[in-house]
Image 1 (cartoon, rainbow, N blue to C red):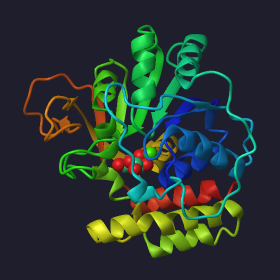
Image 2 (cartoon, rainbow, N blue to C red; image 1 turned 135 degrees about the vertical axis):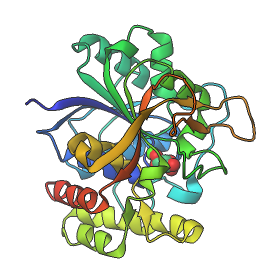
Image 3 (tube, rainbow, N blue to C red; image 1 turned 30 degrees about the horizontal axis):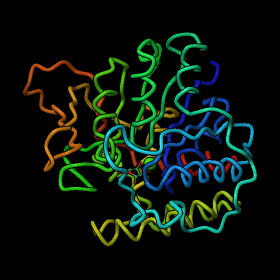
Image 4 (tube, helix red, strand yellow; image 1 turned 180 degrees about the horizontal axis):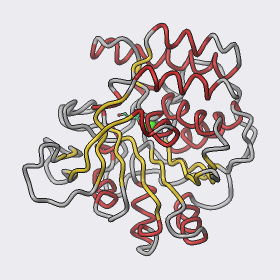
Length: 313
Ligand code: BDR
Ligand code: CA
Protein backbone atom coordinates (compact mmCIF):
# COMPACT_ATOMS: atom_id res chain seq x y z
CA UNK A 1 0.00 0.00 0.00
CA UNK A 2 1.26 3.49 -0.75
CA UNK A 3 1.96 5.95 2.04
CA UNK A 4 -1.02 7.91 3.34
CA UNK A 5 -0.90 11.59 2.37
CA UNK A 6 -1.10 13.96 5.32
CA UNK A 7 -0.81 17.65 6.14
CA UNK A 8 0.33 18.39 9.69
CA UNK A 9 -1.17 21.63 11.03
CA UNK A 10 0.73 22.55 14.16
CA UNK A 11 1.89 25.03 16.83
CA UNK A 12 5.13 23.40 18.08
CA UNK A 13 5.29 22.81 21.18
CA UNK A 14 7.44 19.93 22.45
CA UNK A 15 4.63 17.39 22.03
CA UNK A 16 3.92 18.66 18.51
CA UNK A 17 7.64 18.16 17.80
CA UNK A 18 7.50 14.50 18.85
CA UNK A 19 4.38 14.01 16.71
CA UNK A 20 6.10 15.55 13.68
CA UNK A 21 9.29 13.54 14.22
CA UNK A 22 7.28 10.31 14.40
CA UNK A 23 5.56 11.11 11.10
CA UNK A 24 8.81 12.13 9.39
CA UNK A 25 10.39 8.89 10.60
CA UNK A 26 7.71 6.87 8.81
CA UNK A 27 7.90 7.71 5.08
CA UNK A 28 6.68 4.25 4.02
CA UNK A 29 3.44 4.85 5.94
CA UNK A 30 3.00 8.62 5.94
CA UNK A 31 3.70 11.00 3.09
CA UNK A 32 3.94 14.42 4.77
CA UNK A 33 2.87 16.76 1.94
CA UNK A 34 3.52 19.81 4.07
CA UNK A 35 3.56 21.26 7.54
CA UNK A 36 1.38 24.29 8.22
CA UNK A 37 2.15 26.44 11.24
CA UNK A 38 -0.52 28.24 13.24
CA UNK A 39 -0.43 30.54 16.26
CA UNK A 40 -1.11 28.66 19.49
CA UNK A 41 1.35 27.55 22.14
CA UNK A 42 3.49 30.54 21.10
CA UNK A 43 3.02 33.24 18.42
CA UNK A 44 3.19 32.31 14.74
CA UNK A 45 6.74 33.56 14.19
CA UNK A 46 7.92 30.99 16.76
CA UNK A 47 5.70 28.09 15.67
CA UNK A 48 6.86 28.59 12.06
CA UNK A 49 10.46 28.64 13.31
CA UNK A 50 10.02 25.60 15.54
CA UNK A 51 8.44 23.52 12.76
CA UNK A 52 11.55 24.11 10.66
CA UNK A 53 13.87 23.28 13.56
CA UNK A 54 12.07 19.95 13.87
CA UNK A 55 12.35 19.22 10.13
CA UNK A 56 16.07 19.94 10.26
CA UNK A 57 16.49 17.74 13.33
CA UNK A 58 14.84 14.95 11.36
CA UNK A 59 17.02 15.63 8.29
CA UNK A 60 13.83 16.30 6.30
CA UNK A 61 14.37 19.76 4.82
CA UNK A 62 12.49 18.51 1.75
CA UNK A 63 9.17 18.93 3.59
CA UNK A 64 7.68 22.39 2.95
CA UNK A 65 6.74 24.44 6.00
CA UNK A 66 4.11 27.16 5.50
CA UNK A 67 3.19 29.96 7.88
CA UNK A 68 -0.53 30.33 8.47
CA UNK A 69 -2.90 32.37 10.62
CA UNK A 70 -1.34 34.51 13.32
CA UNK A 71 -4.51 34.94 15.39
CA UNK A 72 -7.81 33.13 16.04
CA UNK A 73 -10.80 33.92 13.81
CA UNK A 74 -12.38 36.47 16.13
CA UNK A 75 -10.56 36.41 19.46
CA UNK A 76 -7.29 37.58 20.89
CA UNK A 77 -4.58 34.93 20.85
CA UNK A 78 -3.98 33.05 24.11
CA UNK A 79 -0.58 31.32 24.34
CA UNK A 80 0.94 28.68 26.64
CA UNK A 81 4.50 29.72 27.47
CA UNK A 82 3.76 28.61 31.04
CA UNK A 83 3.78 25.03 29.71
CA UNK A 84 6.15 25.10 26.75
CA UNK A 85 8.62 27.85 27.72
CA UNK A 86 9.44 31.13 26.00
CA UNK A 87 10.31 29.62 22.62
CA UNK A 88 7.65 26.89 22.71
CA UNK A 89 10.41 24.34 22.29
CA UNK A 90 12.40 24.94 25.48
CA UNK A 91 14.56 22.10 26.75
CA UNK A 92 17.19 21.04 24.23
CA UNK A 93 19.59 23.49 22.64
CA UNK A 94 18.84 23.26 18.93
CA UNK A 95 20.28 25.40 16.11
CA UNK A 96 18.24 28.15 14.48
CA UNK A 97 16.76 26.79 11.24
CA UNK A 98 18.49 27.48 7.96
CA UNK A 99 15.68 26.21 5.74
CA UNK A 100 13.33 28.96 4.63
CA UNK A 101 9.55 29.02 4.84
CA UNK A 102 7.75 27.85 1.72
CA UNK A 103 6.23 30.62 -0.41
CA UNK A 104 2.56 31.31 0.14
CA UNK A 105 0.08 31.12 2.99
CA UNK A 106 -0.66 27.85 4.81
CA UNK A 107 -4.39 28.23 4.13
CA UNK A 108 -3.79 28.47 0.37
CA UNK A 109 -1.54 25.42 0.54
CA UNK A 110 -4.27 23.44 2.31
CA UNK A 111 -6.91 24.51 -0.23
CA UNK A 112 -4.71 23.93 -3.27
CA UNK A 113 -3.56 20.52 -2.04
CA UNK A 114 -7.09 19.31 -1.36
CA UNK A 115 -8.19 20.51 -4.80
CA UNK A 116 -5.19 19.00 -6.58
CA UNK A 117 -5.15 15.53 -5.00
CA UNK A 118 -7.84 12.89 -5.64
CA UNK A 119 -10.85 13.41 -3.33
CA UNK A 120 -10.60 11.31 -0.17
CA UNK A 121 -6.84 10.86 -0.29
CA UNK A 122 -5.52 13.64 2.00
CA UNK A 123 -5.76 13.47 5.80
CA UNK A 124 -5.47 16.64 7.88
CA UNK A 125 -3.67 16.32 11.22
CA UNK A 126 -4.32 19.40 13.36
CA UNK A 127 -2.20 19.56 16.52
CA UNK A 128 -3.06 23.12 17.56
CA UNK A 129 -5.94 25.61 17.37
CA UNK A 130 -8.10 24.93 14.30
CA UNK A 131 -7.75 28.42 12.76
CA UNK A 132 -5.96 27.40 9.53
CA UNK A 133 -8.32 24.52 8.82
CA UNK A 134 -11.48 26.54 9.51
CA UNK A 135 -10.22 29.42 7.37
CA UNK A 136 -9.61 27.00 4.49
CA UNK A 137 -13.12 25.54 4.86
CA UNK A 138 -14.69 29.00 5.00
CA UNK A 139 -12.74 30.34 2.07
CA UNK A 140 -13.17 27.24 -0.11
CA UNK A 141 -16.43 25.48 0.81
CA UNK A 142 -15.70 22.73 -1.76
CA UNK A 143 -12.65 21.32 0.08
CA UNK A 144 -14.14 19.83 3.30
CA UNK A 145 -15.80 17.02 1.35
CA UNK A 146 -12.49 16.19 -0.34
CA UNK A 147 -10.76 15.44 3.01
CA UNK A 148 -10.11 11.76 3.77
CA UNK A 149 -10.15 12.26 7.55
CA UNK A 150 -9.30 14.92 10.10
CA UNK A 151 -7.32 13.29 12.92
CA UNK A 152 -6.84 15.96 15.57
CA UNK A 153 -5.70 16.56 19.13
CA UNK A 154 -8.17 18.65 21.08
CA UNK A 155 -10.99 18.70 23.57
CA UNK A 156 -11.85 16.67 26.64
CA UNK A 157 -14.88 15.07 28.23
CA UNK A 158 -14.02 13.10 31.39
CA UNK A 159 -10.85 15.17 31.90
CA UNK A 160 -12.89 18.36 31.34
CA UNK A 161 -10.19 21.02 30.83
CA UNK A 162 -6.56 22.05 31.15
CA UNK A 163 -6.54 25.78 30.27
CA UNK A 164 -9.86 26.47 32.06
CA UNK A 165 -11.92 24.19 34.31
CA UNK A 166 -13.95 23.13 31.26
CA UNK A 167 -11.81 23.58 28.16
CA UNK A 168 -8.78 22.06 26.55
CA UNK A 169 -6.21 24.52 25.15
CA UNK A 170 -6.46 23.92 21.37
CA UNK A 171 -10.25 24.24 21.31
CA UNK A 172 -10.31 27.09 23.86
CA UNK A 173 -7.95 29.29 21.83
CA UNK A 174 -10.22 29.30 18.78
CA UNK A 175 -13.65 27.85 19.57
CA UNK A 176 -15.25 29.45 16.51
CA UNK A 177 -12.75 27.65 14.29
CA UNK A 178 -13.38 24.36 16.10
CA UNK A 179 -17.11 24.84 15.65
CA UNK A 180 -16.67 25.24 11.88
CA UNK A 181 -14.50 22.12 11.68
CA UNK A 182 -16.80 19.95 13.80
CA UNK A 183 -19.77 21.03 11.65
CA UNK A 184 -17.90 20.57 8.36
CA UNK A 185 -19.14 17.06 7.62
CA UNK A 186 -15.58 15.75 7.17
CA UNK A 187 -14.86 12.48 9.04
CA UNK A 188 -13.21 13.46 12.34
CA UNK A 189 -11.19 11.44 14.85
CA UNK A 190 -10.57 13.36 18.09
CA UNK A 191 -7.78 12.66 20.57
CA UNK A 192 -8.95 14.53 23.68
CA UNK A 193 -7.25 14.87 27.08
CA UNK A 194 -9.17 11.72 28.09
CA UNK A 195 -6.67 9.70 26.08
CA UNK A 196 -3.62 11.97 26.05
CA UNK A 197 -3.49 12.09 29.86
CA UNK A 198 -2.90 8.33 29.68
CA UNK A 199 0.09 8.77 27.34
CA UNK A 200 2.52 9.75 30.11
CA UNK A 201 6.28 9.82 29.70
CA UNK A 202 7.42 7.96 32.81
CA UNK A 203 11.09 7.92 33.78
CA UNK A 204 11.62 4.53 32.06
CA UNK A 205 9.96 5.70 28.89
CA UNK A 206 12.07 8.85 28.74
CA UNK A 207 15.21 6.80 29.43
CA UNK A 208 14.29 4.69 26.40
CA UNK A 209 14.20 7.84 24.21
CA UNK A 210 17.55 8.97 25.63
CA UNK A 211 19.07 5.52 25.17
CA UNK A 212 18.57 5.81 21.41
CA UNK A 213 21.83 7.75 21.63
CA UNK A 214 20.96 9.86 18.59
CA UNK A 215 20.44 13.64 18.29
CA UNK A 216 16.71 12.96 17.92
CA UNK A 217 16.53 10.64 20.95
CA UNK A 218 18.47 13.12 23.08
CA UNK A 219 16.37 16.10 21.94
CA UNK A 220 13.09 14.27 22.61
CA UNK A 221 14.28 13.24 26.09
CA UNK A 222 15.32 16.84 26.85
CA UNK A 223 12.04 18.22 25.53
CA UNK A 224 10.01 15.94 27.79
CA UNK A 225 12.33 16.68 30.73
CA UNK A 226 11.34 20.33 30.31
CA UNK A 227 7.68 19.83 29.47
CA UNK A 228 6.94 17.35 32.28
CA UNK A 229 7.46 19.80 35.14
CA UNK A 230 4.15 21.51 34.39
CA UNK A 231 1.93 18.42 34.49
CA UNK A 232 3.83 16.88 37.40
CA UNK A 233 3.22 19.97 39.50
CA UNK A 234 -0.35 20.48 38.37
CA UNK A 235 -1.74 16.94 38.27
CA UNK A 236 0.85 15.04 40.29
CA UNK A 237 1.19 12.85 37.19
CA UNK A 238 4.10 10.53 36.45
CA UNK A 239 5.39 12.61 33.57
CA UNK A 240 4.53 14.72 30.55
CA UNK A 241 1.45 13.75 28.53
CA UNK A 242 2.40 13.27 24.89
CA UNK A 243 -0.82 14.82 23.58
CA UNK A 244 -0.07 15.41 19.92
CA UNK A 245 1.86 12.18 19.18
CA UNK A 246 -1.44 10.35 19.77
CA UNK A 247 -2.46 11.68 16.35
CA UNK A 248 0.53 10.33 14.44
CA UNK A 249 0.57 7.07 16.43
CA UNK A 250 -3.11 6.60 15.58
CA UNK A 251 -2.29 6.92 11.87
CA UNK A 252 0.42 4.29 12.21
CA UNK A 253 -1.30 1.82 14.58
CA UNK A 254 -5.00 2.65 15.07
CA UNK A 255 -5.54 -0.61 16.96
CA UNK A 256 -3.67 0.91 19.93
CA UNK A 257 -6.67 3.24 20.49
CA UNK A 258 -10.35 2.87 21.29
CA UNK A 259 -13.24 5.32 21.31
CA UNK A 260 -16.86 5.96 20.39
CA UNK A 261 -18.59 7.45 17.36
CA UNK A 262 -20.60 10.25 18.96
CA UNK A 263 -21.87 13.80 18.63
CA UNK A 264 -19.42 16.52 19.66
CA UNK A 265 -20.43 20.19 19.76
CA UNK A 266 -18.30 23.19 20.68
CA UNK A 267 -19.38 25.83 23.20
CA UNK A 268 -18.75 29.25 21.68
CA UNK A 269 -21.08 31.63 23.52
CA UNK A 270 -20.60 31.08 27.26
CA UNK A 271 -17.62 32.88 28.79
CA UNK A 272 -17.66 30.37 31.66
CA UNK A 273 -17.40 27.27 29.48
CA UNK A 274 -15.88 28.76 26.30
CA UNK A 275 -14.30 26.04 24.14
CA UNK A 276 -15.83 23.11 26.00
CA UNK A 277 -16.24 20.03 23.83
CA UNK A 278 -19.75 18.88 24.67
CA UNK A 279 -19.31 15.20 23.86
CA UNK A 280 -22.40 12.99 23.96
CA UNK A 281 -20.39 10.00 25.22
CA UNK A 282 -23.45 8.38 26.80
CA UNK A 283 -25.74 8.96 23.82
CA UNK A 284 -28.30 10.98 25.75
CA UNK A 285 -29.27 13.20 22.81
CA UNK A 286 -30.42 12.40 19.32
CA UNK A 287 -27.83 14.74 17.81
CA UNK A 288 -26.07 12.98 14.92
CA UNK A 289 -22.61 11.47 15.45
CA UNK A 290 -19.96 13.66 13.83
CA UNK A 291 -16.70 12.36 15.34
CA UNK A 292 -14.91 9.35 16.73
CA UNK A 293 -13.95 10.45 20.24
CA UNK A 294 -10.97 8.44 21.51
CA UNK A 295 -11.04 7.46 25.17
CA UNK A 296 -8.26 4.96 25.77
CA UNK A 297 -4.95 3.64 24.47
CA UNK A 298 -2.44 0.86 25.01
CA UNK A 299 0.20 3.13 26.58
CA UNK A 300 3.04 0.59 26.50
CA UNK A 301 2.31 -0.17 22.84
CA UNK A 302 2.19 3.56 22.11
CA UNK A 303 5.62 4.24 23.65
CA UNK A 304 7.13 1.16 22.01
CA UNK A 305 5.87 2.46 18.65
CA UNK A 306 7.22 5.98 19.22
CA UNK A 307 10.62 4.77 20.40
CA UNK A 308 11.00 2.42 17.47
CA UNK A 309 9.98 5.04 14.90
CA UNK A 310 12.23 7.72 16.42
CA UNK A 311 15.12 5.24 16.27
CA UNK A 312 14.85 5.40 12.46
CA UNK A 313 15.93 9.06 12.37
C1 BDR B 1 -2.56 20.75 23.50
O1 BDR B 1 -2.21 22.10 23.78
C2 BDR B 1 -0.84 22.31 23.56
O2 BDR B 1 -0.28 22.89 24.70
C3 BDR B 1 -0.23 20.98 23.22
O3 BDR B 1 0.74 21.12 22.21
C4 BDR B 1 -1.40 20.15 22.74
O4 BDR B 1 -1.61 20.30 21.35
C5 BDR B 1 -2.92 20.04 24.78
O5 BDR B 1 -3.98 20.68 25.42
CA1 CA C 1 0.02 21.37 19.88
